[in-house]
Structure formats: structure tokens, C-alpha cells
Length: 418
Image (cartoon, rainbow, N blue to C red; front, side, top):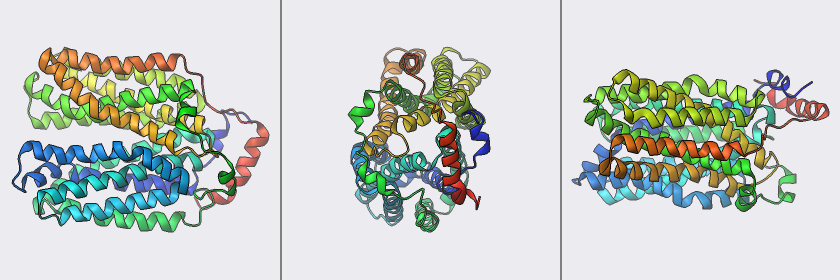
């Protein structure tokens, strides 16, 4: 039995499907409230700037609380932190629905960011613990695809709820999260895979500084920073402005262009995860980053609609290609038995920092020079990540035949219900 043959013979543990389903529902809820939040904020008789502060406060709290979330995961384990994080978001999202003043909404939305980073960091840790090493790329692709599909479906559902009331999306999302907490607890409370093994307490946690010495982890941080800059930052801030100012198209075309980018993600993420498990993390990370750099870098160089959509699709394919690869590489560096909440928090923070700084830097460059220069710098950030991956070693594990037999036997009971 070889390392390349094993993934096809292994099945996903049931716990992975639980986390994937939860990810989909969480993403739908996030998509529900994202379009309604600015309008809801302005309903408290505040201006556009104050409404933007509410949006930014959530991301800022995620970034600030990420190190503490990592320490909580190391101290208490992934499963309880995941559940408590979901519950915190549920409670304060429901509180947002009941807000009577602007500062109430700002406070409750900020506190939701604390819970969000708790369940995000712990979810990554759970996936590492549960996933067979030979399936890490596929699991990462499956998890990312579920979240992306939920993010696409959310605004569609949310538009109908907003027609009823601006508070309705928050109420619906809060109640849905409570249901997710119950379902995840029921399905994982007796799971040996999701629980903390006794040997974990004897294993010293991997520190962020230790992981930082590994070239593959440094490369993953840089590529996740680029991913945050492009996908979570510039895509949502600069592209809509470029479409109106340069392409002279309306909001309906903006939605279509963003959907093209998302489609590129969805089309390749599962395929990329499979190749990351069979061909290696490094080739897929390099291929994805090159496409992300070229696609995002050329977005602002044309006023031709079809070329713009082609560049957007290429950037989306690039992002979908690199995501499973660098997530799997972080899991390889950390290992199944290692405790490393700080390592996981650092990986998440890299994307959050990119998402915060990307739109700001790109906006200043666009105002002072041009949109073309702003998108070129964006492509350059992804291109810089390529250099980090060129010197990084391959981390794809190659277990021995006897290890395969032990893994198959250990997961026989866990997978028999799937």
C-alpha cells in the first residue's frame, strides 16, 4: 500500500460531516446579516461612517481576540471552545436583533467577533485532529467549499428577510446558531476523535515561535495573508468601485462579477484538495498563488468587460487552488497529536490582517495613482507569497504500511456509520 493509494480507500469520519454541515449553516447566517447590517445601523439615525464602524468592529475583535482564542484551545481543547464560541455568537446576534440604540448594536456586534474567532480557531484544530493525514487537503477543500456555498446562499435568503424587517436576519441567524450548537454537541459529545486524548496533556503544546521556524508554516502565513488581502479585502471593497468608475456598470453587474470569482473558488477547491493529498501541498500552493497574482494583478488593466470577468475567474480559481494546500501544510507542521492553539491563531490572524490592511492600502493607491496600480500591488502581494513557497519543503506525509494498518483499524468504528 502506498501513500498515493491510501486516500481513495479511506472514508471521511462522521465528525467531519458534522463540522462541514455546521460550517455551511454558519456561513448562510453570516451571509444573511452582512447585507442588512449597514442599513440596520443607519436606522439608529447615524451616518455612513458610524455604520461602517459597526462592520469593522466585528473584524477588529476577531483580530484582537485571536491570540486569546489560541490559548483557550491549548488550555481546554478544541471541542468546548468551538461550542462556547458558537454560543457567544448566537447570544449576541440575538441581542443585536433586540438593540434599541446604536451603541447597543456596536457592543453586541463587537462581542460576536470574540465568539467568531473562538469557533474559527477551534474548528481548524478539530479538523486537524479528526482528519486522516492522507485526506487533509480534501477535508480542507470540503470545509472551505461548504462555507463558500453558504456565503453565496445567505444573501439570497437574507434579501427576503430584510423585506420583512431589518431585525429579522439577526433573529433568524441567532436561533439557527443555537440549533447548530445543540446539533454539534449531540453529535460530538461522545466522539473519541473530537475529544482530547489523554496523551495530549503529556504532549507539550507547539508554540507560535516554534512553528515560525518551519519554512512551510512561514509560507502558509504569507499565502493566507495574501488570501485575506485579495479575497476578504480588495474583492469586496475595490472591485465594486472599479466596476462603477471604470467599467461604468451598475450594482447588478457587481454582483455578477463577484459571483464569477466565487464560482472559480467552488469549481476547483475540492479538486485542489485531492491533488494536494496526492501530488503535494507545495505544487498546488504555487499554482494557486501564480493564478491569484496574475488574475488580481490584471483586474485593473482593462476596461473590457469580458477580460475583466476572465481575470476575476482566474483569481477565483487561484484562491480556490491555494486554500486547501496551505491549510493542509499547517496541519502537517502541527501534527495530529500536537496542541498548538497559538499556531492556529497565527494562521487565522494572517488572513485577518490582510483583510484589514488590503482595502486600506489599495484604496489609498487607487486615489493617489490609479486603479491599475492598486490591483498591481494586490497581485504583487500574492506574487511575494510565491517566493516563500519556492523555498519551503514539501510537507505531505508518507506513512509506512504498518501505520496505514493502524490508522484503518483505529477509524473502523468511527467510520462505520457513514
